Image 1: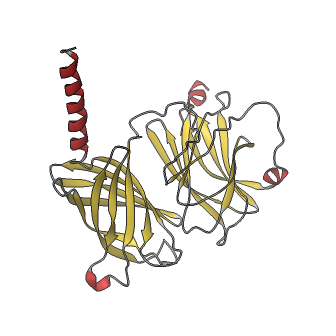
Image 2: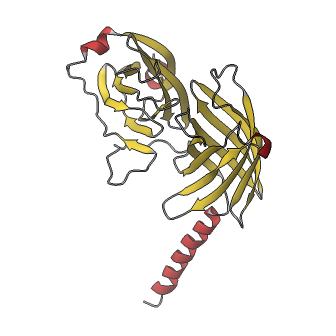
Image 3: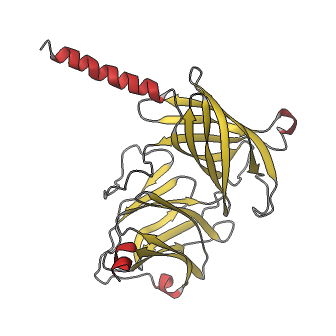
Length: 309
C-alpha cells in the first residue's frame, strides 16, 4: 500500500505537468469559422491555423475558404505564456463585401487571441482586426479556433461515427450508412442529372474521413451525398458546422465515385460546398458546385488496384 501512494502521486504530477505544458504553447493544427462583427448575414471564413512555436516566436500558415476560393497566408507572431496572449503581425484578408474573390479588395488585419485550456479542449479565442482608422470600414473577423488532436501524421482509424448525447457545437455527426453491393432503389432524379467530374483523386483504398461545409453565407442549401450511386448521406442542410463522415470504399473497384446531389439551390444559387477528404497522412480540399441539372462528382482512384494493373 505504501508503494502505491508514491505511484499515484507521480501519475497526478505527470498529468498536471502535461496540462501546464499545453497551456504554454500553441503548436499544432487549429480549426475555426470566422464571422464578421457586423449585423446581418455575411459570407464566413472557414479557416485552419498550422502553427509552430519556438520560445515566444510563432510562425506558420493560415488557410481559409471564402465563398468559392481558398487562400493561404504565412503568419508570424508572438505568444506570451504568462498571459496566454497570442498576437499575429498584419496579414491580408479579402474584404467581406467583395463581389468576386478573383479581384476582391484586401484588408490588412492584425490578429489578437487568448489561449483557453480546459479538461476537454483548447481554444484560441479572438479576432483579426484593422487599425482604429479603418475599424468601421473593415470590421473585425471573430474566430474561435479549436485545437485538433486529429493531426495528419496519424492514419484514420476504421471506426464508425455514432451520435452522442452532447456533440461539439461545430460538428454534426451523421450515422454511417455502409453501401452494399446488392441492387437497391436509386433516386430517379439523381440518375437523370448529368454528373460533372470535378477532380480525380488517388487514394490509399483505406477508410476516408469526409468533412462537408457550406462554402459561404448560410442560405439554406440542402444536399444528399452518394457513393457509387448509392445513398450515403440523406438530405441534410449545409452550414458552417462540419458534417463528418468516415467511409469505407469498395476495394474491388479501381474507381469509386462520390457525388454531391443538390436537393435545392438555397437562397443564392448554385449549391456550393467545401469538402475536405482525409486519407491517412494526406488531405484533399475541394469546392463542389451542383445545381438542378448537374451533380458535382469526384472520382476516387484506388492506388492499390492501380499499382497492380
